[in-house]
Image (cartoon, rainbow, N blue to C red):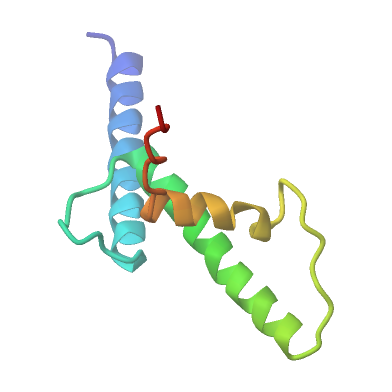
Length: 100
């Protein structure tokens, strides 16, 4: 195998080790699930995103309760994702069966 390919493989291996180490650190600061399952990479990133949003939303609501100004709710604001976080952690119950 040529030297350039070996160096490229080594860089990629190091990149993946660094990414996996960072994701493990991120998993370490996120709330744990009851069954202690290890989240996948994408689940970790999504959960972290939603967790950050939920914390931001908590602060926003506390500010509102103290008479502070409300943040604008947009698809890119942290508050927009609260329902996603709640749904992700506590999915709604199934709807009741229709009456026949």
